[in-house]
Amino acid sequence: MFVLKNLRHAYDGGDVLNIPAWDAESGAHWLVVGPSGSGKTTLLHILAGILRPTAGSVTVAGQDIGALPAAGLDRFRGRHIGIVLQRLHLVTSLTVMNNLLLAQYLAGLAQDKAHVNGLLASLELGDKAGAYPHELSHGQAQRAAVARAVVNQPQLLLADEPTSNLDDQRCWQALELLETQARACGATLVIATHDQRIKSRVSNHYALGDSS
Image (cartoon, rainbow, N blue to C red; front, side, top):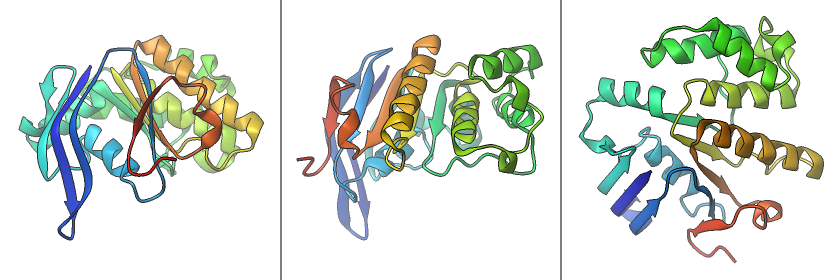
């Protein structure tokens, strides 16, 4: 589903990432593990096309995303890649419904309120469609961010440290939410984490730095 070849990224002349090869199958679930500073967030940003690597190629769903111009990359990302960042980045001036409709619009897709309503209902947010982000609890805001990430049924779903600041119960709920939504889309799921609790729940690990 995605292929990395000779991927390297450097800051201030020093390599942060050096990945000779990584080929992830469609529908697989992966953890990117490693200590703080090992490049986990950088790797997710490269997979999402938010950051261009210093060298190497990134192919997602058969497309070399490095070959796309900026506008084409934005459109491709909107249609094929969903991402849940550490800071949820819901648009504060828009309702939950309009945050999801905006994601459809930016991807060049038809704005489908029926689909959005169904997705929100499946995430127990049906009564929050008209709410603004500041009116949501943390758990509701996290579910809304996941809904926005999967509303366009992406082929690749990325999540950056989604459980690290949660208690045990909310940790498992967040992980189950991501896994369930990835399965619903048939998406490859990649979670960047240093949370030791979830390592046993996801069998595929890609280690960066000293992950012991």
